[in-house]
View: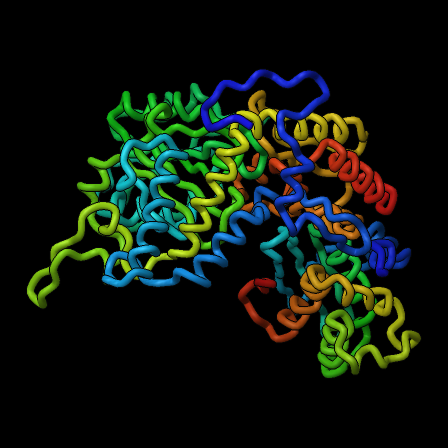
Amino acid sequence: MSGSGSVVEPPPPGSSPLDVDEIRAEFPALDQQVHGRDLVYLDNAATAHKPNRVIDAVREHDRATNANVHRGVHALSQRATDAFEEARDTTRAFLGAEDPEEIIWTRGTTEAINLVADAWARRELGPDDEIVLTELEHHSNIVPWQRVREETGARLRVVPIDDDGAVEMDALEDAVGPDTALVTLAHVSNALGTVNDVHAATEIAHDADALALVDGAQAVPHMDVDVQDIGCDFYAFSGHKVYGPTGIGALYGRRELLEEMQPYQAGGEMIRQVTFEETTYACLPAKFEAGTPNITGAVGLGHALDFVTDHGRDSIRAHEDRVLSAATERLAAIDEVEILGTAEDKASVLSFVIEDVHPHDVGTVLDREGVAIRAGHHCTQPVMDKFGVAATCRASFAMYNTVEETEALADAVREAIEIFH
Amino acid sequence: MVDATDLYQEIIMDHTKSPRNYEHLADADHEAQGDNPLCGDELTVYIKLDDGKVTDVTFEADGCAISTASASVMTEAVEGRDIDDVEELVETFKNLVTGEEDANAIDPAELGDLAALRNVQNFPTRVKCATLSWHTLQAALNGRDEPVTTE
């Protein structure tokens, strides 16, 4: 097993760089039948299952540690604080950030983006400012900026995607100019799997003295992420998509920016001193963490990230690429299937439609075959509009999926075609 | 074990592939739109009334097999009925697809093609697809302007 960032030799053809049987044994939820069939769980872009290590860490924390953080003088509070801050440092290392105080706990990616919209954009932007985003974005990286537009008069510029579902980088470069205050984009598209060149996007933003925000929800589980290498100003992700608990995620922000920003929510924990006349705010990261945080969630997330690091993100990526290629080949071989999202660099997601069959009906048939996929617009209606569909079927893969499971997927798709044609 | 084919029975597939009363009704007295934001289903129901009776009912839809079939079956079931009777049928249908006991006791012969949708009760994630057109029908009868949504 290799550690994070280590160089991994390409695996011999036909073999996986991961011991997937061993990994699957760590995930109790995978070992079950649904509708009398072995579960084939291919809805990982929605949420990933949790390994025993995370389940046990969460349970053990609640069972034996459970105390509030940063305020008690007793032993349990100290233990809880240590575990909580250790998780923050694990997250820092996982993202390649310099300083644990640059990691702000949030409920997930959505809250992380809303934090930037609220604590930075809403206060700093005006009618002369522009926010540049892409057609590929999840609603959670569109709607917060529309609200900023309503409240500040700032303008939104949308960079189109091409027919393969890749962001048109020339158009991004054209869209960014002297008025640009922020460039915000997904690292990996949740609807199509496209991997965006966030390094280049950040550089384009910085060349125009704009900030760069990266929505990393779909990238963090699948590839090495180094925020200092990317150079971005903000990076957001969710715990539950990277084998951690729901309700916990993080925002990375560059220290100088976070220090300049106003607090997000107000209350306990985020203050230094309160009188009725005046309140002064706590330093980072507490300034952005009002109220008792999701302590158990943070502890669980720390263990999830360690689990991923232990298996090696390069190995995970290599394994998932094999599974994605196998699934793509198998579905592409079926005449009635059309694959949406054919960008050169893709990770983990296979979106498709079947001629004359609504994705919802496909989802139901696959479910009865034990194959769990997502059918819908994936909170990316502009992407659906671009491809002229109301919805797609989406199979999304994790480190525990196998090439054999892609066969089950293809069989179930053929079954759906048989029922509907 | 309830299979997918128990849901997608021949009658359902027939209504999906050849929906009945599938047209825009230009001189409708009432119309309403419904949508299911989860799957993107959209549908419009048109009604003509005469003396408290539904004399004509049609629909247009962009949706899944279940919502299309359900709308098609619905138009056949409500045409010619009194409005009060239609309201009662809507409730019966909702009870049928959600598996309420009373509705399960109804003789399938009385339900006609509607009975084919009974198995939706074994597919809880699809109940909203089956009821969308019926909610929209109710909205049209009650003259509501706001589009109906399942969410």
